Image 1 (cartoon, rainbow, N blue to C red):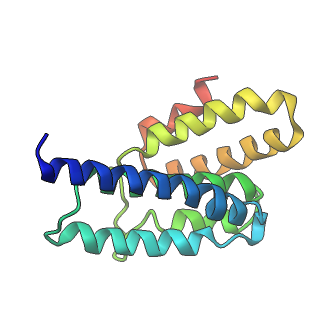
Image 2 (tube, rainbow, N blue to C red):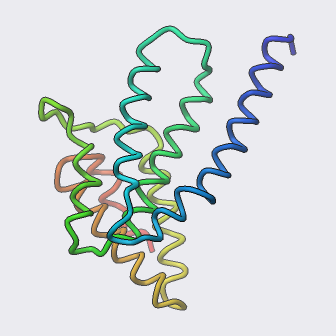
Length: 163
């Protein structure tokens, strides 16, 4: 492995560590605020920054972008699990699925896999925990909203069939 590759690998490992800390210390804590959580604002900012960075030539590796995408979906999932299924906050989370000109995002890398993993975990834990059952219901609502606006219909539509 050459020096540049080693540096890149080290930077990616550091970025992954930072991601774990952010999830535990920031995203989970904010999501736990329930209907009042503001992760949707953080998601808006991440989407904007992600688009700007990806469009420009940069020193960032594809691994850097993958970490950010997984963090974005983590925020979506954590937030949706804590916002009541009938609360307008659920709609705010979906709003960023449509572009500024009404185009729907349909190819969202890693979203399906991350939602499936969260779904399986929620379904597994729901029978033993009232809070888990509520989070499962809330996640189901968010997934249904995504599908209703045409986001990853085939992949996300499978979630409810896989338990």
